Image 1 (cartoon, rainbow, N blue to C red):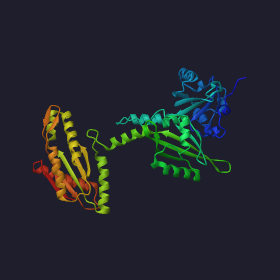
Image 2: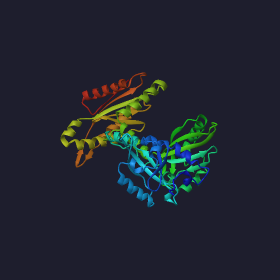
Image 3: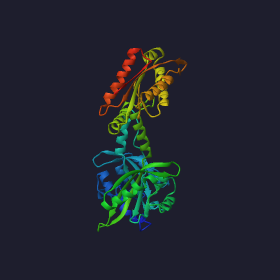
Image 4: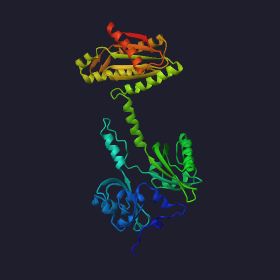
Length: 428
């Protein structure tokens, strides 16, 4: 008599509600026998395929798969003990295909004949976002593939009823070690700074019945602190009494790193690494607000390289770029209490925080002139440059960014009229 796979074959601990894990999982889960025949599935499996489980029951899982040979080969690997994930295109009832990340988990690791959980993660959103970011100038891939979520069941006493095996990838230690160590902690290896957020999110979700989603840092044995997204869903019984919290933890460290890089290049000049106009204007707005509220005066210093066009014409744009980079480096070394930014071309601007005295501004300007006037070695060429500087001490309240920019620009223009390689300071 053919043995139909079911939850009883997988159930080893009566305290774990596997049916609940099965039903609440947002990924499609099919239960198949060792020959690939479908016997059951959760609601997500019906949503992703477009078929009801009754329609799929006793059908081969291959009827839902586009590349059947690839699927067969992967399933043979599973039967041989190689538990890996793979990408598969799932055929929907409508005829559409969905890119899925598929993982096969035996109901009983000691007897594969009892069947398998076949988990399909819809990667459409991930792939769509990835494709959009590939089309951008920065060409960063934001969505990381093959993210393995950790599923945790916690009871009202915050005891861990279940921790999925994928926790090994998340924490860098064996699952049994994770379970043992977690029992001594209210949550998991979270950063101490995130404990309050976790506690509050857990309590609020339990009280209101609303799911929560937060980002925290957790400790990986080898990688150190990594970013993770935690989604918590409270579960109640028929009497509306809190029963369990289902936690799904996803490693988002790769996405976080790429988002940080994307944000960096959105606010920084790619040639010099200095803040760009967009970032500078953000800091200028903050300084204007401090001036309006606290009366904290600041100073803008605008400068460019004298006769920079001649450098490009004489030595070429590659040497010109090296000159720009060196000027940026020297400017950064001079500025201690403020920021320097590249506005474009050979034009730079400096914001000095809480700077109100003319002598203080002159000191910074003299340092800039001294550093920038030193010979620049670019390739085999030694280039001497000078710069013209226009500065404005900003003390008038309730003015726009353009007002202060224009004041510095007027000062620079006056220097150019005098013959360059000088500076002019005015008030605005």
